[in-house]
Length: 106
Image (tube, rainbow, N blue to C red; front, side, top):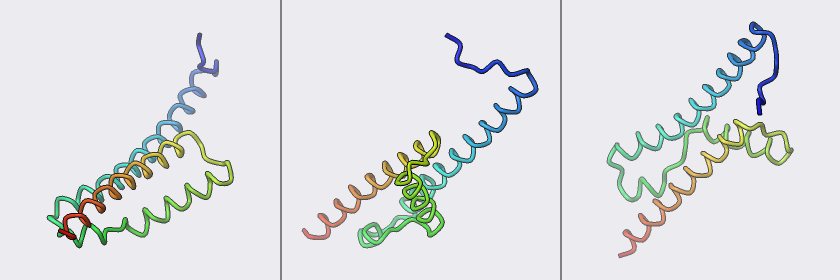
């Protein structure tokens, strides 16, 4: 079954270019979050640094924006994926912080 709309070639190409740009921007935001965490972890942080880690203001603002859109039911498919990535990274950092706290308490 073909789910691709039957637009003429120039219009179809324009739509795919726009969709590609949106996907690329979402991918770049995902990479920014992941890169920020990777840069932090490869800077040899102390256990205290790990516990105190917070994403940059820009990434926190983006997460808040996505959460608000989600509450309003206005989250698009790519944004939904982006919010999922934020959740995965948050879960990862929460587990890392818990282990750091456990090591400090020994």
